[in-house]
Image: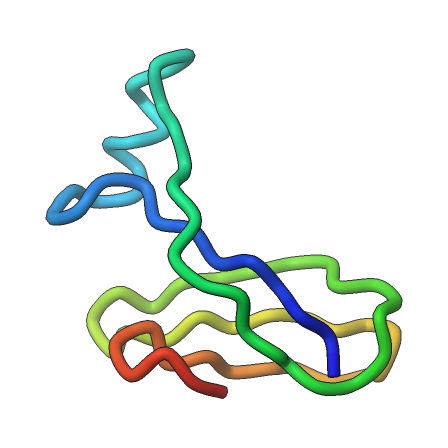
Length: 74
């Protein structure tokens, strides 16, 4: 299992608005979550805010991990 630290930008704000804030933008750790697989090549992430799903490209395992951000589980 690969433990990954998840973080949130600002509660209630869209992620793009948080990035626009520039240098004052800070991530806050939420939890460490085991994602499974090896520890190589966790490359890209995409968030679907409507469905509360975070898609993580795990290229080292040729897989896509789907994390439910509301329930906080894979």
